[in-house]
Every structure is written in structure tokens, then in C-alpha cells.
Length: 301
Image (cartoon, rainbow, N blue to C red):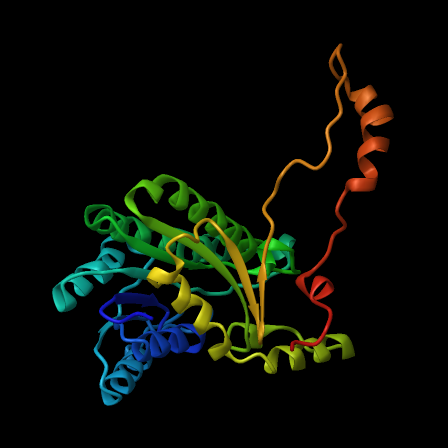
């Protein structure tokens, strides 16, 4: 599927990113494995995980290099593209997978918790994408695969920073898809369900929470990789601006916000008429406050 392609995977040293890097290599791609090697909350750095993935790819006869750049630094993020061009002469696809968590209930969330999550999970995706976009435009082709989350698409407790970043990724991806379609570039999102060190932070104090964790443990990271590899391939050249989710052996296509109701007054609205007329009309169409686990309430299949 990726024979002759060059693919860069951020956060490629562990979890979902690792599985994508390994499958991309098995499908014929040369892989730039980017991973700062920090903890799940963004502390520290260690090139070891990326080096291990590269060694595994090479041992199987594939081609791969390590890039240990911090994607939240623009110049460092650009080095991912530079390393791909230097080692393999081109770059065909970017998988934006790296991320951190700093979960706090909103009224206890610090500015540092907010800034760090936005800096890495959203700004970092922009920096990598911007560097790659210039190359993709020149070569007239390219694919972006960005990782979003149902924490943003649907909702979750204690993740205002992460949810905001991941919804920002959706807007970023859609804008790239629109702006770069004329250059033959695609951009899509995946919301993954998989057990990893990121999801290992999910509370498991109540019976319902423990059941949710057990469901997550049944969803391995390798189940996410096939869709990411497909979206990075030429077989997906007509797929762009879409939001997918993967949950074990299930793949979902998400809707995007569109108007569902409208109401008109020829003489305009006042706060009073909004309360007395519009609110009763719109109320049946209001969505309820839900978490991802409320929507995906059945066991993964």
C-alpha cells in the first residue's frame, strides 16, 4: 500500500504511533519515527523508544530513521521534514499523533496545564503540518493524518485543555483539506479508541469506571494503524476533510456541525422574544451533555 512512500509519524515511539510506524514500514514505506520520548504529561525526554522502533523496522528489512524533535518548537518540528528529505529524498505523508495529557477539572486547571496541552497537541500539529505543506505543494501531492479525540468530538470530564486542542485539530485538518486540495493534498482525522499510557490515566474508582477501563484494555493500539496507513496511501486520494474513529474492529465516520433548526422573525429578535418564542421551539433539538462513554456504551467488537 505504501511502496516507495516516505511517511513521518510523530509520537512514533510508543502506543498508536509505534504501531502505525511498524505497519507503514511493512507496507513498504520508509519511515521517520519522531518521538521526544517524554512522559504522558510531557515531562522529560528519551530517544530510546524511537530508536527501538527504528531498530525493529530495520531488522525486518525496512528503512527508518529517528527524529527526536519537540514538535511544539517550530524549528524542531521543521527538522522532521528536513530529515525525511535528507535521508530519503522526499516526504509523502505526515501522521500527527504525538500528544500529552494534563487532566484537571476545569476550575482547578492551571494556565500551565492549559498552555502546555495546547502547545503540543494543537500548535505542534500546525508546526509539523506547515513545514510539510510547503514540500507537498511543490511536489503536487501529500497526505496528512491527524489524531483527534472523542473527548473533543463528544465530551469528557476534566479535559477542557485536551478537548479544546483536539477540536482545534479538526478545524486545522478541515482548513488544510480546503486550502490544499488544488495541490493534490489530503487531510483527515482519526479519533482512536485504544489502551495506551494516555488512556491508562482514566479513573477507575467506581464499578462503571472499572468496566469502562476493561473495555479500553480490549482495544489494542494495532487496530488503529490500518486506517492511518490507508489514509496515507494513494488509495485514499479522494478522501479528505473527513473525521473517522476506530474502536477495535469498528470504524466510524463522524458527522460535522451543520444547522439543524432555524427560526425567523421579520421584525428581528429581542432577548424577550428569544426566551418566549425561540427557546421553546429550539429546546427539543438541543443536544444533551454526554461523554464519549455514553455514546459508545456497547462493548467493542
